[in-house]
Image (tube, rainbow, N blue to C red; front, side):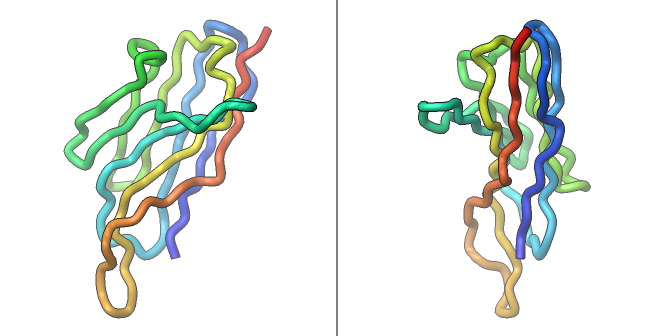
Length: 124
């Protein structure tokens, strides 16, 4: 069983900062790409930032220069440092990991796993 647990969301004023964390645990053979997605009320889920196992990163245009994604492979954890937050960043943020879990028969093919989501609200 694999779990992704997020933390670090909350209420912040415009211009403020937050740091999200997401730790993967369970029977994990290898983690490939990890990423953060968000979904605002009435909108579709969108990608915010992704990072490969080799630590190549990609960002949505709307967050470039303000958000930084990083990972700690020893801890199976991905982070999202969010600076200069704007009201339009308000959303539920979801962690994603493409990973190979381990079953009794051995490593399974890669699959996507999701965290439960953490609320980020930017408001004065």
